[in-house]
Length: 203
Image (cartoon, rainbow, N blue to C red; front, side):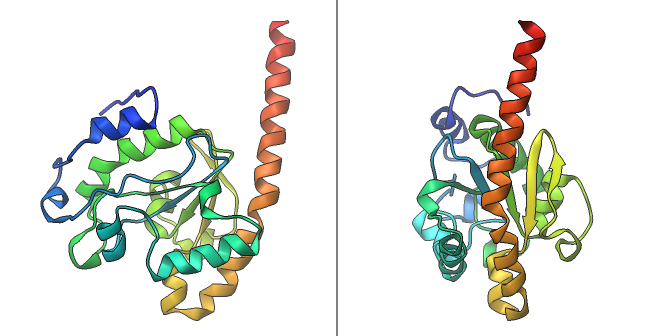
């Protein structure tokens, strides 16, 4: 499914009351994503959980509280970045996303990323990392390492929920997030340099 929307509002309208897979029959609320349409940073999680399904917003439960801590530790707040998930609807019982569900939702996520065009994408957990990097490498090997795929700079990290269940991951999460400010500045500098080069070539 090739998508080309003018903006996020058009994309949200295109998705509509989605029943393209069976999750549309079991969810309470479709969780599209939140944040500025021109955000420098996009966080991509896995799928809505119970609280997200009820509220229609990503990361509003216990994992959301830890996410707020992580952002505060680097002087940021969630209203300054965009937050989305691989899936827009909650899998029943918070089970893992299934392959056909990911395949159905992926065009919507990719169009969100194209429209926002962030300096940095932070993937939280295995599902978003493996999807956007097209890899089977586990997050334990990839977290904290800057990767490039699909024209994007991507920083994989653990999902905050994983650090709630396994507190040993907390330090890694905070260390990974500590890289974000410098990575955004670096990416912005590279973009300016590339634009100047293109300008010189066409001048």
